[in-house]
Length: 87
Image (tube, rainbow, N blue to C red):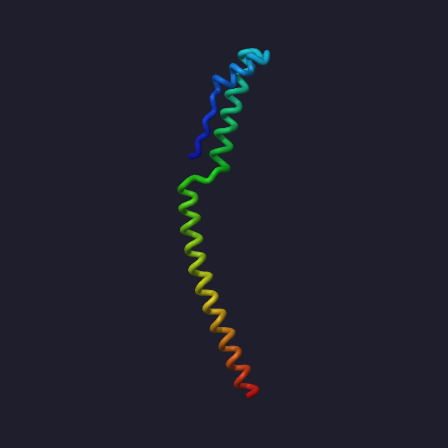
């Protein structure tokens, strides 16, 4: 899980200095901390996600290499048949 540093006490103090009531400032700080937490849990990739994706990419790379060879052989075979037909 990704984390972010959010100083709720500093945030509350700033809001209070700007004229916001203490209860209101505390509620906003809690709500904002919750939003940050939810956003980070659902949107940021973890190291495990990156490792899993790297593994999948390596598998796909191998499959792509195999498909290139197969396509080359098919094109070569078709070319041989066409040349044999006309020459």
